Each structure stands twice: as structure tokens, then as C-alpha cells.
Amino acid sequence: MQALMLAAGMGKRLGAYTDNQTKCMVKVGGRTLLEHAADALRLAGIHRFVLVVGYEGEKLKAFAREKLADFELVFVENPDYASTNNIYSLYLAREELVRDDTILLESDLIYDPALIQKLVQAPDPNMVTVAKFEQWMDGTMTLVGENGIIREFVEKKDFRFDSADTYFKTVNVYKFSRSFSQKQYVPFMEAYIRAYGENQYYEMVLKALAHLSFAGLKAFEMGNMKWYEIDDVQDLDIANTLFAAEGDRLRAYESHYGGFWRFGALKDFCYLVNPYFPPQRMVDQMQYFFRTLLTDYPSGMYVQKLLAGKMFSVKEDYLLLGNGAAELINTLGRALKGRTALSVPAFNEYVRCFPACEIVPIAGANHDFRFDMDVLREAAAEMDNLFLINPDNPSGAFLTREQVLELAELCREHGTVFVVDESFVDFADRELRFTLLENGLLERYPNMVVIRSISKSYGVPGLRLGVAACSDRARMEKLRGLLPVWNINSFGEYFLQIYGLYAGQYAAACDEIGRQRSKMAEKLASFPFLTPYPSQANYIMCRVDGISSKALADALLKQDDLLIKDLSSKSGFDGRSFIRVAVRDETDNEALYRALEKIHV
Image (cartoon, rainbow, N blue to C red; front, side):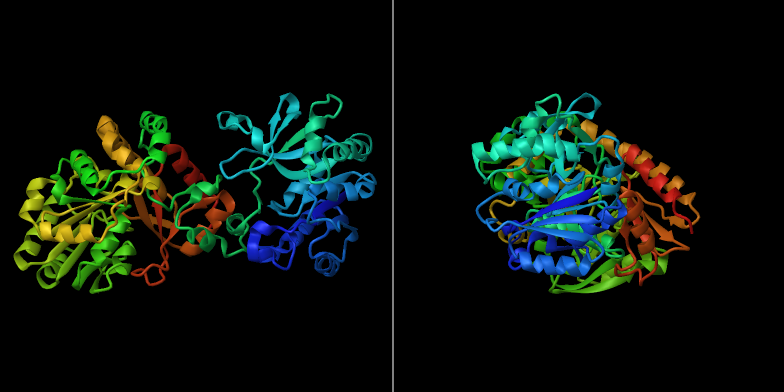
């Protein structure tokens, strides 16, 4: 068995990364794609490696001779790499292709090193490596029939989104027997080039062969093995996350601040959303109007606050909609100044976004990460501003309605601005659940600003929605003046418009979070290295003993593609080992428990 890599192309879409080197010289996880491929070939026992070179070919050959000295290296030149496509590179290597059974590779791939070994060991002689279609995939697809036979290769121009669930993406790693190359592939390739020219793709030959019963091309499914095709800089960033060097993987994921839908296998217990809402019918309703929402402008602030007023039963003049709660926090940060009390650790935006404020931290660790009402009362009397996140993030600590209103009264008496973030309050147990979004309360406490994240609690983080409420008209006008006219898109606006049809289902979804949180707290407490803290949010904070929180997070990510929040570097923990785990649906939560059972301390 030998390997043949097509590495002649210029990789223009990678920009500066391929200004003076070919794509297989680009580094992922600190090592070149060529070195990653060589590791996989060694594992499979392959030591003859044919490389078709062109762009910056001399550099590639010198590098390969240095780093792959244990291989029998064969170089095939493609001097016309700039004007031809990969079918011509393979055509130039046809004499090498027919010498032996061959693993055919492209140069822009990164994959689990076990892939080649498993492909070689697979019993079928001619195989196309495929992966179930996911949203990030592009290019040639396949349809797989009974017994794994490739029925058809589907070109990009023929791709149908209504058939996407039936597609398998070609990974561009193939196993060809010598007989197949001699008797079928090479003769068909030569005929195809004569008919259509050299600026074509070699997959088109496979497309033609797939229609012939004697071809016998079988699918080799990737299953859970990781891989990525690197065409541009975003692909490279994702590949560097998936295949980060040991010890860097957690940091690489965290640097994305979300966007984890690009990592299909990842189970995200870090970001905090409602897994039980919106219901499918609401999603279907939004999808039905997708084109209208996509192609029409949203309304301005006036309509947005009308819709928010309808949703929360609050006077529209008291409301302000934001592109997520983060935009509202940032905007408020440009309007407030003075000494500001904040319980820490806290959501980072409350530290980062208030440049004119002197943040006076209330150390949660001094009270076992629970709220200390005496300290909060003192702050309400002495500070210019008091910030309260209730339930607290990340601890899950909670003040009752009576306690919060006591602080509101004190702030009113002393002229203290009272900012209450109740983004997670809907997840509190039903008997404790409350909101300050009431006209009477807002009017009694004009010094109070209430902030709520719609994105988190309503399960629509992609819509980026948040709301702020305050009855102080001058303050609200100032905040509105700091926002753009269109800060909410049409999808977010339509969500606000139709929410009332599903309000009952939302309440039930929040109740279910409470039930799952109780189960999770009990289960987490059964692990000797975890001590969960009481929570009224859709997450639970745990102290970690016997292993560092970073090591635990690294292990879960490496073993099970499971992402949790390591809190050790967050202000207020002083390097101590704490984690935060989101409450997800029962299936995902069970996956977390199984993953934790593998941790041995």
C-alpha cells in the first residue's frame, strides 16, 4: 500500500498563509498538514509517499525530505498548476497510481490519525471516505445505498437543501486497489480529460464510475472521527480549535465566545440557554416567513418597544430593546459614573463596560459565594450605584423578591442607582420566581434599571435580544440616544411579535429546567471531586477537589467533546478550582454524567 497526495495547488483563499508555501505546509495545532498526514500514514504502516507538487514545489520537497526521511518519497511535477485543476495533477501521477494499492489524499485536510489505518484495514478494496452532511460542509456530496455502495456523486451545483439529510460529504481520502486504478479509474480519467479538458476535478471521474455496477465503490463512514477541510482562514481557525495542541484545546474553544454550531460533535455545557424553548411550532412559524424576514428591513425603536411592552406587560416608554443584554449593559456603562458596588465573581460585562465607574467589588468568597444582605444594605446606602445579578452568575445564588425590594427601597432613599440583571430569574423554582418588570415597581423606583437577556432564557441566543426597563424618562432617552436606529433585526422583531402565542409553553419550559436542575445537583454531589452550590439559575457552580478545574475541563473536552466553564481564572476565585455547568435537556445531562464517571481522581 502506498499514499499519493495532490499538493500542487496555490491555495489562494488562505491568503497570507499560502503567500509563499503550499497548503500542506500550513500549520494546524503547531504542525504542518503534511506532518499530520505522515503521522497517519506511519500508523497505518505506509512508507511510500507520492507527492504531486507545483506551487512552491521546491520548498515542499526540501521540507518533506527533512521531516519525512523515513518514507520512500516520490515527487511528480505539475508545472501547469496555475491553469489546471486536480484531475491533471492526478493524471500526471497516473504511472505511480497504478503501481500499487493507493490511499489518495488531498493536501488541505486534517483528520483523526487513526483514519488511514482503519481505511486500510477495511475489507473492501475501493472506498470513498465520507461523513454525514453537516452545515459547515461544502463541495461534492454522495448518496450511499444498500451495503454501503456509492450510488451517486452530487456536484455542488446539484445540491438540494431539501435532500441534505440524505447526503454524505466526500472527505477526499480514498482507497483504490491497483486493479481499480489500472482497469477503471485511469482509463476513464484519460477519456474524461480528452472530452472536458484539464481544468476539471478528479471526482467527476468517480461520478461517472459510480453509475457502473462493476465499479463497486463503497463508502467508508468517518463516524465520530474528527476531520476538517481547510479552504480559507475561518476553516483554518476551526481546524486549529478541533486539533489544538495538548493543553491549548480549551483555550481555543473559549476564544470563540460561542459559535459552537460549527463544531457538530461538541456538547456545550458552557453557554447558558434554554433547551426547552422555543417549541418546534414557533420555529416552523419563523421559518415559514424566513425569506420575508431576511429581505425586509426591521422596524425602528418605536415598534420594537411596543412589541416588548406587549411581551412583558410594561409601558413601552419604560423599555429599551438591545442586541442582547450585552449591548444594553455596554450602553448603560456609557451613561453611569461613580462608585459602583458589584458582587464578584460576576458576568464580565459588568466589570468591562463601565469605564467611568469605580467598581467596588463585594467578595462573594467571603460569604461562601452567597449574597450577604448586610453588605448589600451598606452598599445601597453608601454607593452611587449598586449592581445585582439575580440569580447570580456564576454562583447561582438568589435573593427573594422581598430581599430585592428591600434593597430597592434603600437605594431609593439614598439616591443610589439600582441595576438589577434578572436574566436567569425565570429559571427559579416556581414558588420563588418573580420579575421586577412591573409598571408599579418601575414607577415606585425610578432609580432602578432592570436588565433581562431574552437570548438566554428564551433559548434564542442567535437572535441577540435583551431588554432594559426604567421609568426615569430622562435616563431612557439618554440610553436610546446611544443606540443605533436598527439594533434589532427582523428575526428578533418577529420573535417578539409572536411570543404571546407560546407564553404558556415558555412557563412549562422554565419549570422543566427547575426539575432538571434538581436532578443535576443531586447527581453532581455524588462525585467525590465535586461540591455543587445551591442554584436558582439554569447552571450549577461546583467546587472541584483532587483535580484542578482546568484539568477537569480539559479531560472532558478531550475524551467526550464536552465543554464546561473553568472558573479558576475568573476574578473573585483567586485561582481556586471551580466550574460552572449549564443545565441542558435530560439526554445531554446524562451524557455529562457518563463523562464525569470516567474521571478518576
